[in-house]
Image 1 (cartoon, one colour):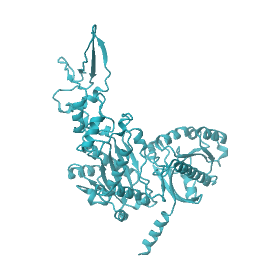
Image 2: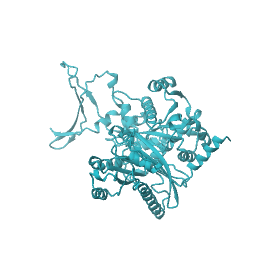
Image 3: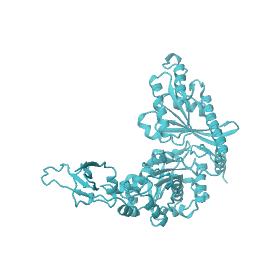
Image 4: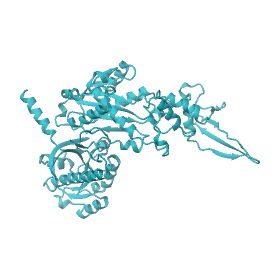
Length: 549
């Protein structure tokens, strides 16, 4: 072994020698002193020159607290509004936040409430926050009294410090207290889980808190998707870039899970790895996820976290509702286009994160050459390889397929079908593939004659559409064209009637559904041709008008 490689191995071993790893973010308005605060803590250095942070930056520091060696990933975020989309993406998985204002700047103090809202919106429920009033050395320029800071902290339920990065006042205390709070909460959660007989505490399952003593880290925080399964979400690993990442080049592999099933989401994954560290993937045994057992996939997925200085992943979860409505809309958006766009978006997200992507490997959807040309047109400086069976040929694609499969399985297993009553919750749905007899039985038993399928079902699949045609109340939609129309923009009225006739001694009641289209349509126009089954869902949103004759 050469001297260089020996030194590198020693450094890697030291990097992995920790009990916990916490992801912390410093947030607040621009120029409140976040970067100086971070450099004072991590490097014990200070400069009075103001350099605005572009996007996001980070430092790594290991500390000892309560007999635990804790590795801190400390992220310094840009305060400007134009970077907000980038910075809020890093909130997910963060264990703690240092929310900072400048005691000489009233506006930065007034913005604290807005920053708290951002934390609640983009982070997970158990993230801990400390409020910090920085630049307390500038007493002569003070605009916000210490009492006001304490009062606001009490109102928000936060601990409070006044600090100075320049004079090194309370900087270390802030970080130590935040780490202590997180450890205390972890201990409380552990005690509670022991008392209730639950194996995992809420912190151990968070991507921002990796516990090396845990054999398997097999879950992602998918709570955002579980709260709103109609939307798509982005999930990220806790990749920890190093200071010399500018010189690194990465291979990125893209694959998906859940393209064929009629149930649940489709998950697209982009897995990136340092070109010089690809041997890690071979050592872990990465292979096509379909060739691995569920236990083996979960085990490999857990190991990724241990190497997060060299590799990471970004996932896009596409909801079954979005997939179906896209495929049934007037201007068709088919599954191939959905897949291609998801891949392009993930590449862009990796680049936005600062990953220097040298080459992309993709498991093809459709014609490999056309797909590759589409990617090259968007990213001409990146070498692109698109092929069939890429998940068996290229390690980064194999690793990506494992990510997609593990996370999709987790979402499907945790999915609670809110549309079902308690009795129906026990219905088994099988593999989720259209040809599975148990899945077909689930579809038949789960459909509502008026409202169709629950959100768990991709109702655009032909298997589901056939059941809709056979089981749901039929609605006939006729197009009435105005022959005297003189303008292309003339609004045309589309009518349908579902008539339920109830004969009594005195009255007959009819229910009339009216639907008005704001877009002119032609009966033979292929772009506007009705897809079987889609009209049932349209009818479900129309309120009937009841009248007597």
